[in-house]
Image (cartoon, rainbow, N blue to C red; front, side, top):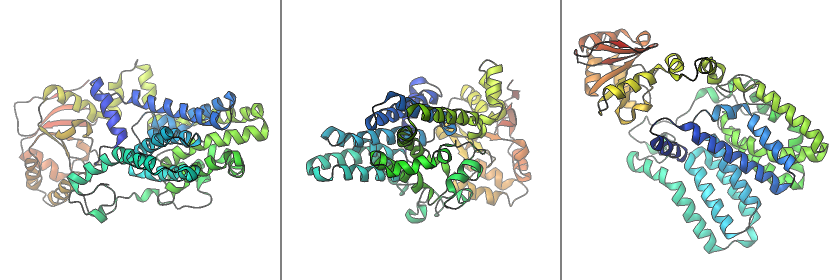
Length: 447
């Protein structure tokens, strides 16, 4: 996404203040905020601390949460904002609560355009609760707050690219910075069907970059309780809102991560209803058994969690270099480059399969689909086996450094490296950093 989305802005502030990568602190804040909001929401419906803590326990046990807390995906902050907004709605009406709802809805829009669905569902619910007490002046202030928070990201994207939703809907806005077609991923079109939630639970890899069971078992284990929660008056409105936030994002694309905030929100009415039917103590046994089952499948929620990375971190006393050398060697090369050359010299990633330049900020260039112009130039350069077109491409970017993986180089690229006098400077695992046109630099290897 081109726009400075809210979640990324918050992460950026933390990293600037820390002076290094610091997403763990922000992710922990979002997780604790979501847990607190879900607990308070439960207490608003049913004042029983045992039920509240069971909701929090189930939320903490969800396998996908372990993956989200280790990354920067919007579903984690979205869960916190959605739960907080549901809590505000349950306590409406009130001037301050109306303005809080506007701020939270604006935050959801600012997180990512995909969260607009959840925001609209919650806004409809809020209007239904206060429909007889709508004050025009209060609504005007709420709309202004909403626009101030939600609009900045979209205005920024529109101002510099012509598409406020870039890279989405570029088939409509025709921004020149990307190809004029809708961004899509054919992997996540397995089809919406009555058995979708069962399939997400047990055939997870068709709906998420995860293994079976990596989504947890709430949707299957509590399906009967879910129906009862929709029927009972005490939990009906909250269950309807949560169900819509789960199902609506899955209609156009069956990508399970998009439904996670709705599943988290659904936990409150599920536990309240189950505790009513079975009694708090009996349902607690069921709930904690489900927690254990969820915990058993945590490693299946992400390929990162299922690798030996965590084991290596523990056995090497937190030495991240050993892990990065195997799984993200480009990060080591970039860190070394920052020490060697802290200027704004350009770094070009030659392999479209490894376009890992995010930590280079404005210095990084890639020939992958992230840069349509350079991608088109790459296709053209590959037609010249002599490597001269590749050399011209690299020269045109004013690159001073090249990031590459030798096993992924094409014959034309190898020829270009020879023509341009490129030299290998640093190696880290399967990745290498080369200088372009500077024979004075010698070769070294990272340990």
